[in-house]
Length: 128
Image 1 (cartoon, rainbow, N blue to C red):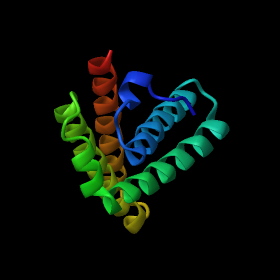
Image 2 (image 1 turned 90 degrees about the vertical axis):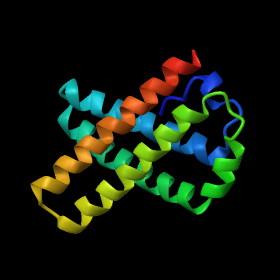
Image 3 (image 1 turned 90 degrees about the horizontal axis):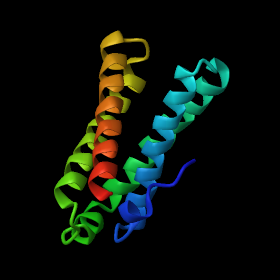
Image 4 (image 1 turned 180 degrees about the horizontal axis):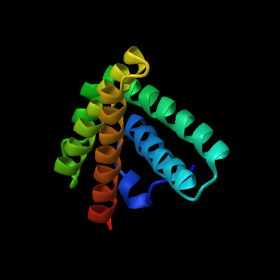
């Protein structure tokens, strides 16, 4: 798993660091799949989704702590958008797990992943 740029991780709560790293792992797992390494890619992708979902659950438990810790962060607005995308991912992941093979739930999860990765990319650009 690749670490987020140091400037992005500075002054963010440890729970947020875990989420940033989990989204990076999801992005990297999708890249492995795109490169054609199907077996390794699928395993890594499924593990990354599960880890991200668990990390988002940790955030939900400490949301007030994280929100207060980010209140003075220069990228507060970007983190808010990132957290909203993470929340959307959590809901889409729940719907996907409940529905099993429903294509609408699968599509919702893919869209939520894309949005979350896009928000991470935006955070990384803003932090540089």
